[in-house]
Image (cartoon, rainbow, N blue to C red; front, side, top):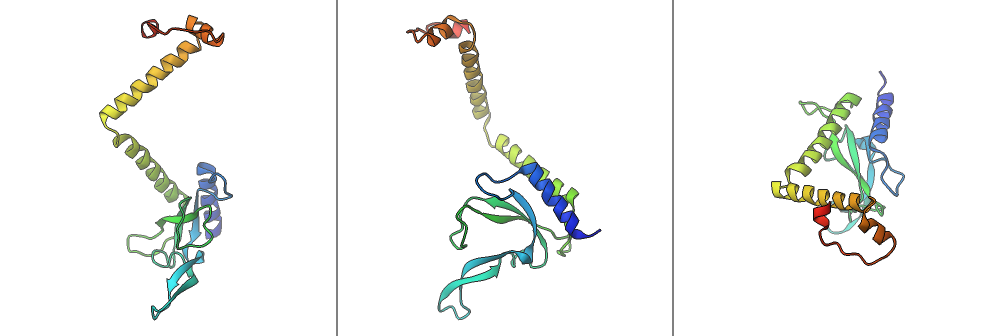
Length: 175
């Protein structure tokens, strides 16, 4: 199997599953060959006497010869040029347990992304205290009751629609 069709298949799945970044023409996630990603960074010259901007391999520290799964972030990096809308940052470099580069395969990318999203959703829920969850549920329930009442054939709904003065004494008992 040639690798390029597998990378296209992975990137198509990432795009179909997670979509585009709003207001850009960029997919939210992509798999790229690490050494091919070049960025202009502010760097110091070897003698340390002055600094300047140079094109550098972005992932030389984590993926000098490996594939990288990237995520698009809208936060700006002041040391990178041309990031007025955002930039890609690494989520995962593809290495085996012996720290040797491996070719990405769709099944493993899907497992990684599912674990990532399950962890994010679980963390959102687990980081809330029981009191926060109870308050949120009560708030949602109250607003749903009010919304349902206002959209029913009630006296209050009729008066509000007719722009008439209305008292809400006893509303809780009626709903």
